Length: 285
Image 1 (spheres, rainbow, N blue to C red):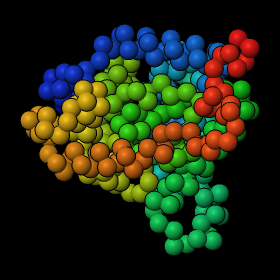
Image 2 (cartoon, rainbow, N blue to C red):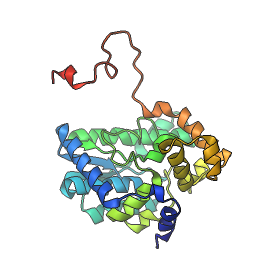
Image 3 (cartoon, one colour):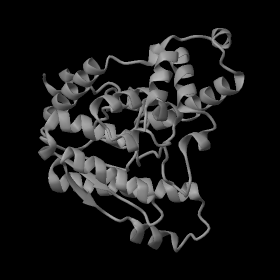
Image 4 (cartoon, rainbow, N blue to C red):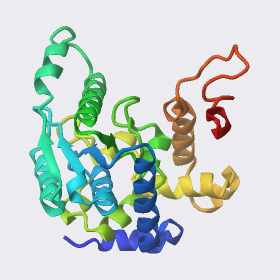
């Protein structure tokens, strides 16, 4: 399947286009350095079959070699078979070690007590279950957990706190979704992953864009002008952005700020962890 649509988007919004070679070099070099800095030589990540986790996988392989990367598939009984197949294609293409851990037994056992739980509540529970599995396997394999959330999702708060947003290091967290697609094409992510509609796979036929109400491309364009260029509403209007889009993304940025920060520590001492006690000098360096 052609990716001309992506080329067309980057032509329409050239300010989103990356220097692919340089960006890949920066991300893989920094990933390797940061992981080594904390004493690890291997990494582990959850592989859903979507583009974000696939890009993190391919970057990790470039940084550490396939022999030092572990990919974990964690399906639920309603997970799309296509997603499992796409994850398997990425595993075979990269040659990494892989595991499959079915989360159905523990999820169903928990919700036997809460049969009326909403799809959102169930989805959040699944995301956090996958996180606990990754961190358990991280300890077992002595491999640091690599994140798979992109910048657009982090800004929107489109993720589960201490679930899919939890990691030790995130190589794609500063890339808009459109840029994730561009870099994925560059590093060789399979076209079946690159071309499909993004989905958290929470229920049948669920898509991110359908749930949010806007396309990632439109949100990325308005985010760039709002955040990177710091344009006000009047300037955004002149660029052609609607109040509906502006208000929707702005509201989500504000509402979900708590998801983007560490837990707030209420200060009573003169050297509070994460506030005053966070510099090299605190460690005698």
